[in-house]
Image (cartoon, rainbow, N blue to C red; front, side, top):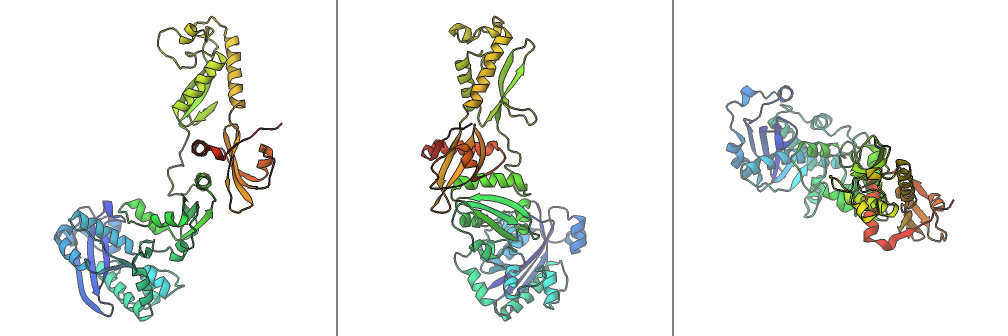
Length: 459
């Protein structure tokens, strides 16, 4: 049995909107067996533009039952049937959400007549219900009303069955098939062609614009996982409606996929990516001259418009670096803000501080040591390559860090014997520095130090 469903609502997503009308047409695969239709009194106001679109006004639903009252009947009609709708995930997400609120668990196989029509009648100019019905001469009595649209979808379903839809339906309903969870405009073939490799994938809208970039350890599994549930939120529903196609770039390693994703998000600025658009390093070392002329070093949260001497992901990393400079160059704990309060500088007691904090040492002498410390820090920031497997047997993947900064990545010929920074740069793509990427690389080499190759910078 098939339950052909259409609903009208107060808005485009289930978690913060109500149903104003439901129509269900039961179809046995040959003919219509039963019809059910009812207006529903929403708990939220019906926006004026929805009233204009559907013709459903507050006055019309004032005496209608609330959803809780009709939920048992709706669930009874749906509980043994295949759930069929035009853009099925929209209607299903609303009814599942509101049935759950009423104490019923809807869990039925789905069929989308958008996807089915694309297979039976390919190359139509549009697959909206109104345009399909116009192209296939299906009359609609009461467009944008649940009863009229459900009846038109039922007639479309009949026409699809008459034109060879049965094999497509059986394929879609096979156990393990994920097709009906896909966005209505995304061809199944685009998901099937994805490889089981690390990489970066791109979701495109109807005009081909990239709207989302993601990374994956396994491209096919990760993309499928996007569509394993139909969230009731606004962003989730808008996201699914937007996706029309997928493209991808394979990567030989998961680390390269993570890096490429970050690069592409910064380059493309896709509307549905949020996490890395505003990413900045958490902390940085800053320097400034105080009123007595001493050059002071301080760790603070990364500032957007103030140049930093060096940045890092955690404050612990910053403290370790600054303590090592203090020890090596006899800097003052207090002038580096590693000691606060009115007690004497611990460096004075330990004879590592030369008295700048109490002006026993001139600012000129102290500042020279600070500058030597910063020069030492810059010279000793690590330069190395992360070497791993490539896409082909005769190459190695390479990620280059020079003086602590991410430079780029690419592929080296496996027979390349001399590895220096300038030679590597000839073989890789250079990218803008990114604190997030640098953190990824450092984290990776902590776990896989055998893939790190120390490099020297030749003049």
